[in-house]
Length: 238
Image (cartoon, helix red, strand yellow):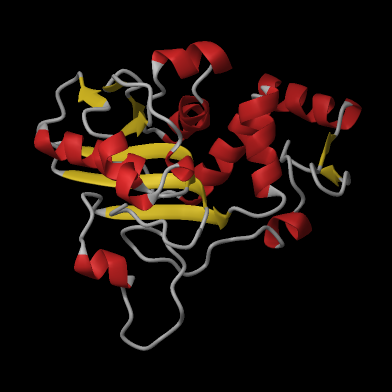
């Protein structure tokens, strides 16, 4: 009761305002209901790569995933990589606004199922990139998910090679770029793994990491990302 009273007093004295329209919000929410509804939600996507799918009868997976099934068992993306989501992610990654990670993580948590025995694994950064940025955005987004009861293992995997961004490479070079880029450090035998990341662009990073986890004995590997960038020719097999 004391904490609820204190929260109420803080809300009255320092009301939270919507990130987009600046109106006061209730319950400490960072976005108002109207702006929440207008976010660029990804409403229809391939269940194994989250690529947008046209609403056609009988179409359940994209052509690429039908022809080249990825290592991922499922892939979920909340949003299309459009304004304001793209701006928020850039603020997090390049302007060190860590409050954005908590906000985006809570948006992700609202759409994820109730916690079970699955283990959250944020996509790791190489130590050079981590030193440069100062934090791993995937880990910061994953932290609020613990409020839902999920188990977080930030040391499950290591990125052993510093690789160029996948989006900067031609399709033929993307798989080779990630060969041997990850190592599984903790036991995942028989475990269900939920990979967490900010943006899915080519999908090759998530697929390579999922493949390593499967080789290490993981029973199932899903990915949950904040946004999907549907660039032409960028699919999980590339």
